[in-house]
Image 1 (cartoon, helix red, strand yellow):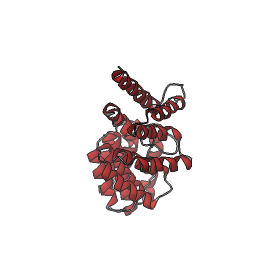
Image 2 (cartoon, helix red, strand yellow; image 1 turned 30 degrees about the horizontal axis):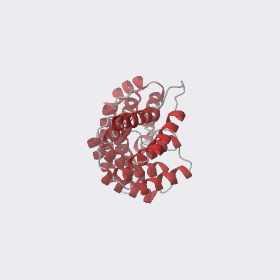
Image 3 (tube, helix red, strand yellow; image 1 turned 90 degrees about the horizontal axis):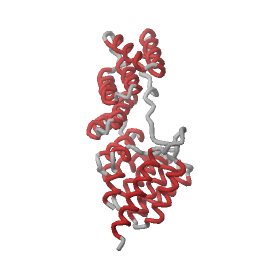
Image 4 (tube, one colour; image 1 turned 60 degrees about the horizontal axis):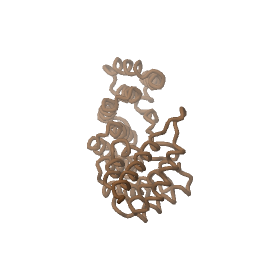
Amino acid sequence: MRTIQNHFTSSLARRFVPVARGTWRPAFAAITLSVVVTAPAMADQYRDCVALAAQNPDAAYDFSLQWESTDTTGGALHCGGIALMGLRLFDAAAERFERAAGLATKVEDSERAVLYRQAGDAWLATSNSTKALEAFTAGLRYLPKDPALLFGRARAHDLAEAPAAGLEDVNMALGVAPERVDFLVLRARFYRQLGSYDLALADITTALAAGADAIPIQLERGMVRYEQGDLTAARSDWQAVIERDRRPNGEPGAAAAAAARFIAEIEKENATTQP
């Protein structure tokens, strides 16, 4: 049992937090800074930079560096962070989002909170739970009940293997946004880690009934059933994941690869216990 648990809490699996379709992905260009938008000349540079980041993040990053020397709004830093996310330089992106949050002194609290949330998301992409927790907590100082920030910090607690703290945050997030099935599935994960298997299964059942993607949920339900000692049901869930989770080229997806490892561990354990 411990071997499979270690597999499931690996870097890959900890980041596999499901939503309605596929794994969770942040939208880093979703915020525009009002202090930039209200200044016409800056607004044009900001829009051009963000648009360029979607097409050519390398060029957008160079653009942001040139603009940064004269920018006092945080827009150049924010666009540079978006570009760095496109280049998969997540730690550098996180630092720029945090600097933007500190530099943009005239932005609304809600905008500053989103900058910290984006920093937290980027730190999560580097598996840096400490930095992610700091960023999400900074954002929550401005928006204490924001469900996205609470969910982000819950994910950081998951990465840090602190399920009790994560459960507290995801419960608060669900209190604000009870319709979010991705929150339910993360809570089920925490319940499982804390040994509350019936509560975990209840959240999984609710998420499935709400139309959530069955692939990540069956992966988690297999873990719950495994912990309950029902190896046949666990294998059934994981086998379904293997059959359904395919990339466009036909290769197994991340969930299928994890499920295959779990089944292999069951078979290995069974082989070693047979007389």
